[in-house]
Length: 158
Image (cartoon, rainbow, N blue to C red; front, side, top):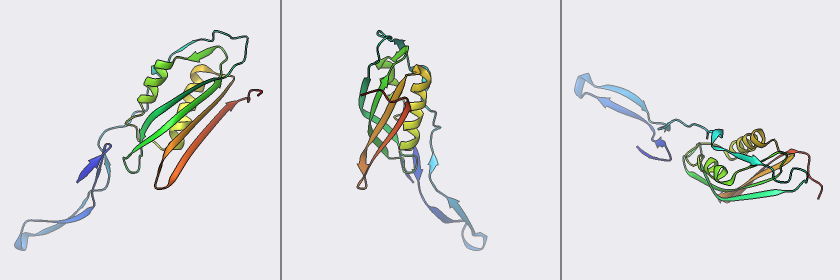
């Protein structure tokens, strides 16, 4: 067996125990098994501060170019960019806490769509922005590049 990213890979195999007339055949299931439990990042990692200009609508954009998670099917690493754009209401997300929250996904087995929606939900619950767009752009694999977007709230006037 061999493993990577917290998973062990193998095959179903017939093995013989004993030899001669006492021989017995057994089938072993060596299918992928998770080596460690997955726990979604704790939202307690995220911190906020008061919006310094609550009387004005303005767009904040944060780009994290080194986001990493794990494919739950293969155990291979997934590399992406997370773009967060939002119009704050009363609170703004603090950047160091946002970075630590993103880094907590590093060993999580989660699909692109699920991680994008989970991050969007966590940030919306934390900040309650007037508008938010969370986009993830994923490095191509097998000739396929993926982008996922979640938009919440009323689109700001351009």
